[in-house]
Length: 208
Image (cartoon, rainbow, N blue to C red):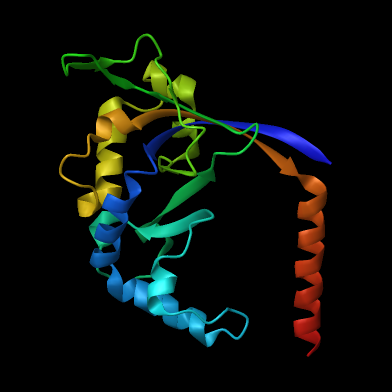
């Protein structure tokens, strides 16, 4: 059985073409931590053997943990030192990825609040990456737009703190904050079968 789902959240969005300028900065700042995670994977008999380069360049599916900019270079494992980077897939039949930034830029380079709710369709991109605010209630678009839940200054400062020096100097963070609407189809039967298979493999491993 297949069903359509729609997710609408306030996010910091990173387009597919922007990601290659950000990820190497993240890797360089946190190579010790990444190397440690790779070694952990290599010690796990259930994890496919890959080189360090393959581990670093693996595709992001769903979400991954990134170290907050203020803790860059550390090896800490405290949950508060991390944030989630999410990846959504586009370029598929029926999938819709639409981003409505809070800030717009006119033909003269002037910026202002996006009063006309001008949208950007990113559906043809293979991947779109995004980061959520710390607290779930701050991802509510009505609260964010009204300013009751989260001021523009506060959300800007939060994302700058999370990303630290991972962003290029010319990255206009303000224009990347807005509302992401992602509509996609899920095959519930296939997911249920995959979950059952994973559970069976886990039971078999426990029995051995």
